[in-house]
Length: 428
Image 1 (cartoon, rainbow, N blue to C red):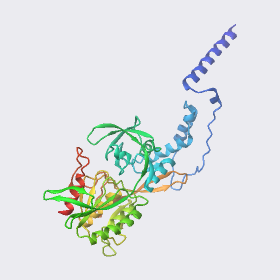
Image 2 (cartoon, one colour):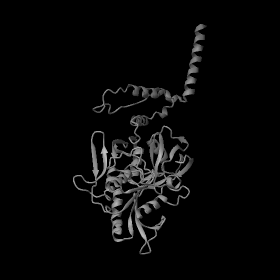
Image 3 (cartoon, rainbow, N blue to C red):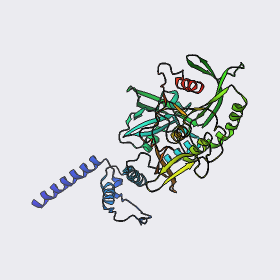
Image 4 (spheres, rainbow, N blue to C red):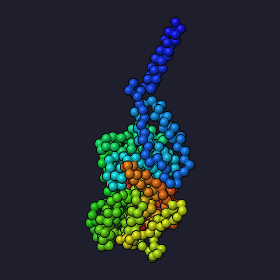
């Protein structure tokens, strides 16, 4: 009798624990035969990496495989990517980042000048995801995204704890699909902005000859209409939106024409170089563009465009060619969206030719990254040095302060008060 009672108790307890296990874990009977399979390749550490105990790493991995309730979430490649991302982010450098294959492809497409998304360059300020600059004519710009906007949510998901690659991954998407960003503008006003993604084609360079309508009180509006009189005042307007794969080629195709017009037309008084909302790009492209405006100098010293410091050695990138605009009067426009390579150009022109910077303080990215392909479609961006202006200024975190500060009028967005002021400074 006792044995039978014991058997009944055992059966009841067994039934209870089976029900509890499958009820709380939300798994089905097919998972009873689950056995994690992991084939580890390239196990040996590279030379120089010693005394690293991976026991905690494998202990955590093993516990996740054994105990995590939803086995469908145990994607080993995603777990590995997450581990690598965590390792890189442990450096505390927002510009040193691991890019899984999709994000790496997106990044390359951006530099190539075409991708699908909203058209905004993102960055970090502290732990926040911010907009460095919306691209010219992009859906982001048209729908009201501003430089310096903090992205609080993406489609209702908080961005707290996100790294830059995750933010890019969540915001980019197929053409024609919507994404809603909850942003905090610089005036501390919060807004939900729904943007329809599109194919973003970035033209790096725009050059025009424009007519300035000025009075004794200063310059007013700028007209793109051809100058009809013999005494009207003109200027060359050069807009550089990024330093990408095609920037140098686009620049060379236009600069000879604009230079010829300046030399032949005495009404053209100089150049306004617009670097606003230019998030940067290749270091060597910054050297190439700056060389258009700076004299080569006397060898071997030459004219320095930018200085670099990798912690052990210092180097200089100098003017690399004979420019066409070295004797032309120039004013440079910058704002909070001017970062990296655009700051290098602005700093080089200011330090070497005392060229005025007009607008707002620039972003302040004073480091150089090397992009590496890892062979599986993924990429790694590593900060390899800091850069300084020719006079030795490190702009990191503080930006370039304009010589003439002027902001856009939020109540009259159609009027470009910064450009008007730049023209006034050019002509005075």
